[in-house]
Image (cartoon, rainbow over all chains, first blue to last red; front, top):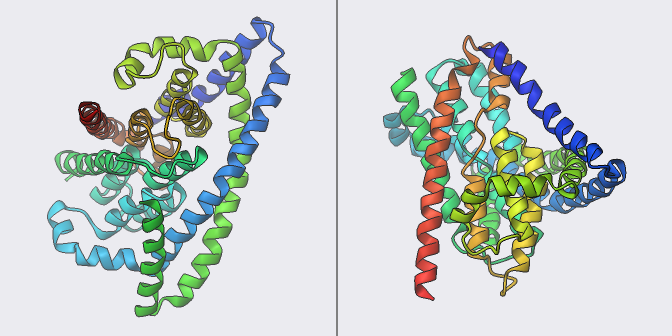
Length: 177
Length: 195
């Protein structure tokens, strides 16, 4: 199964690119000129994202290093216990809302300490697969067009994220506990 | 909202760090995570500009338009107020498809262009439109079908069944996206009624 999947997924990226470039060539476009032109936009985009990323990663970095997440987790432990959720998985779900790279670090720690196929490892895997970096995405997207009043976006994104986390917990209970 | 949140995160972090005697770790984190943000951006520079280049070919060649026609029914349902033939539809479709395929690096530039196009339809340039809210909520609800990156980590860390999470992950993703769509639609209806 893993072989078929890694094999198939190795095809996604090259095939998408092959299709686009092949199509452009057949349509007699100046594909290389167009590519360069487009790539310049990419550089600008990343430069515009950089300040947002520095701001968020450094705020999350402070929170993680201060052990505030651990304290919050310990405080919520009775509730988390009932859900069959360990403190690390809870921290993972919170950190994922800010930064994908920071959450990957927590995920691999959970794998190392509890095992990839333990219920904690399973729950962590499913949570990361069904949630996104809420605050990173909202700040990058809205700042790019200078919108300051975000209306109900944060609430909506949190509703979706909480639904994903709850679903992950329920599914893990049914299948892996 | 984001301003308060950001400030509170830093204040709580430093206060808790002081109380729990973790100030050294906090100091290190301030420097390290700022550095980490920039190294992440350097990785992004290459991949994102590769994608904006390739996507530009798709755009000029008309592939993006073809895709947004295929996605037409979905876009019409989610964004009934975006005019037909508006370029925002193309970028939103590209963003959704890239996310579903797990090509996150391609999704971001398309998504940012979608925001720019949605902003041209906006009367009050500081206030998010209903379309922007819906777009972001769905984008953030996680659309990726097969979590290849997580599967790769699982197999790297010795899982006997790295792919066992595929079906559960698809189920959880469907739940989160449905919740996002329902919330966005309810809020949209409320705003329209108020008008």
